[in-house]
Amino acid sequence: MNNEEAVAFLRNLLQIDSRNGHEEAVADRIVTELAAHQISATKIPYAPGRSNLFVELDSGRPGKTLMLTGHLDTVAADEHDDWQFPPLAGHIDHDVLYGRGAADMKSGLAAMVATLINLHDARKPTRGKLQFLATVGEEYGAPGSRMLTQKGYVDHVDAMIVGEPTSNQIIFAHNGSIDYSIDATGRSVHSSMPEQGINAIDLLVQFINEEAHAFDDAPISDVLGPVVHAITVINGGDQVNSIPGTAHLEGNIRPIPDFDNDKVIARLQQLVDTINARQEGTLALTVDFSFFPVISDRQSALVKTAQAAFQTVHQAPAQLAVIHGATDASEYTKATHQFPIIVLGPGRWELAHQVNERIELTDFQQMIAVYQRISTDFLN
Image 1 (tube, one colour):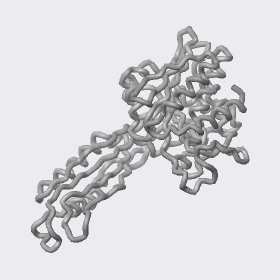
Image 2 (cartoon, rainbow, N blue to C red; image 1 turned 90 degrees about the horizontal axis):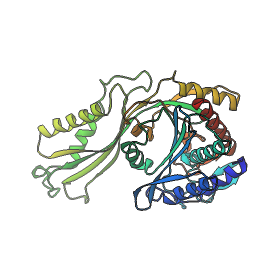
Image 3 (tube, rainbow, N blue to C red; image 1 turned 90 degrees about the vertical axis):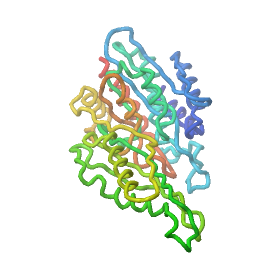
Image 4 (cartoon, rainbow, N blue to C red; image 1 turned 180 degrees about the horizontal axis):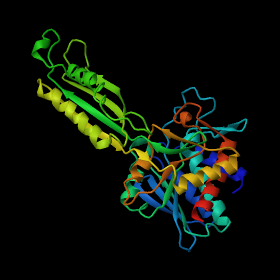
């Protein structure tokens, strides 16, 4: 697959609306492209209209297994937002490709598919196995990678590359992520006699004030820094002359290995229990999603191979870095054995989910070359 063919394939992927819950068409397009090069792909159904993919290039000789992986879904794109070009048009302007998913992360998917095709056509790898997973639902809870991990698809992997956009950096670590909800239940009465009711908003205010300092004593990771936490959604009350009997908030927390998901959730529950014990009315905690933090050894063979490949292709050193977002890698850390994982993909992290999301085609094409060199060198 030459550069022109790879760009045409990427444009085609961008023209498919694969917002969360509608991934099947992108999976089918990848299957078709691989089949044209005599590469078989296995669809792993998750739900109607939603399938993960598994592909393997097996050399037939003993060796290591390298997994390339990315997600099929995107966030939604509103045509009424101020897009310079329609978000599903796959428009190219001055060597820049615009569209929803251009950075996050159809360019990474397309680069991995091109890598599989090019190595297969070159009769590689010559040792070990190169595998590929494409997942549903990463943007909303990562059910695809969770399912694949539970089914054992990564149990024999020696190293993994997640193709999210990384701004020409090699990401060796990222925070976890916990999304949680707090539901407050009070007692609604007329606003002229608030003393006879229990204001559910007041209950949430207590939680908000105490949550602000709930992690002040948490240790700080020397790699990822402190636990980051924020209240991000709040709803309560429906008319101005009634004391609200219910209210709801949502928050997000970015755990670190030094203060992990279990400790964060226990701290939240402790806070809820303390508030509930001192008054009427109740708060209830629900953990909506819980992704683990990921830290890989900077001296691992995968990281060293990736640095050398980047240096060769770009003629410049690769910077090792961390991000505070979360990826499918959090689910893969739950495999039966541990292996190094890096996040490395074309595009800029800060453009993900944005209006005018875009990818420089040179960046995309260079990442194909980087993936090919990592795959060849690591497996050999």
